[in-house]
Image (cartoon, rainbow, N blue to C red; front, side, top):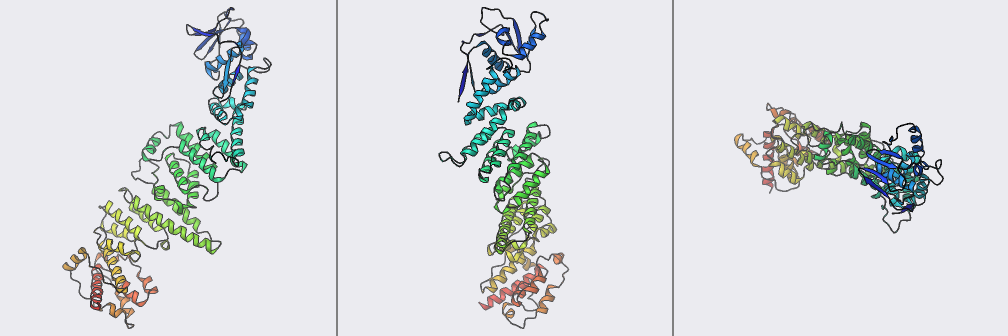
Length: 565
């Protein structure tokens, strides 16, 4: 750190009875109070260099002998005043980046300029600042930090602006040539600055167009995690508790605005993870709706890059018992889907969009598995998010099935109708063999879903020529209490192979009504199956409307396959 010494005389200031004075053969003739400190000094060396003290002494010339000059608002307080006074006496003072700002502001306040005396303190400080401090990186940052205590005066003196320009210029000038140092050598250093200074430096850097967007974002991330609140739930609650009254929270909201305004606009310049963390903080701080909307828009453009943990956003209110803010994730998903509706410019772009949508579907299903553990999650929100994903984006429903299973086990209070309503989001035909095996023995699923899973699994095995699986215990119990008669139409695998299979009979079977409450629980899109499938597949996948009749059909398939083997 550079320093400058002024004056040659030894320090002769001393304290007696809480009063600061200076050793001299000449009696003191002026009393000065700076905040809570008292000084007894001499007019001659002080008034020749301080125009403000000249004016005060003139105003007090007719006052009592012991009148005191009051300087309650002198910048830098007693320490800065004493440094200026020692300069007037010719006593050696040492100046560096650590004290130049308060001394300079005090000198300006006392009007120690060229109008008072040529080569006065203010001029010397300016020369030292320009020739030494601004040429050294650390000295410039230390000086810039010090200006935060006296912002208006430092702006008036040009200290702040020159420091900002010096820092930005050093970053831009050394960016392409910093082979000896890491390319991000400056990002940690400026993270200690206040938000106003930091914002001004970053704006200057961006306008130069030399530093890459990637490095700009790296710097913003470091600064954000240095100053923004932690997104853990405990930290989030403590911040909200004092949100309305805390000036710190208001400052953090302003900081959020500045960070988002500095983000490069190009898609992918900032990671989706970073944007989602900013959105979490925005919720915590109750940031403006426009800022949150902008973050959601940016996230929606690259949602496929996110992870499940990124989407676990705490709710915006402590009065909300839910663990996660599902509405915000739903809004981000809607942004993603809206942006995906824009017409593609080329087939490769369309293929890329399809891949992104499939990745997002996988992401959302993983997210659903996590949030379904929350006992306070409304079922309607779970269904809404699950159904928002296009069906074509899910090649299988295994992850969705796991989410449904977790939710049903976490909410044992759900009645039969609610459980059936939730299970409507599942497509049993899209479950893997492993998922089917699990679902067939799942005691929390509605019975109709279990039977449908069994039927599709048996049909799949029959078509593949394999041996069908053993019926689970709950289905066997149902059969023991209400034995299912062999199907009247004699459905079997061998008959399904016959071209004479009557599709009219199959369709009539699909349209049968049952007096049981399960009659309306239609979880299989039968009309679509009848239109698009082959006769053999239609016969296998066309389910009666009640579990007992489906079981009867399963038994027919079992008998047919067993006979064939």
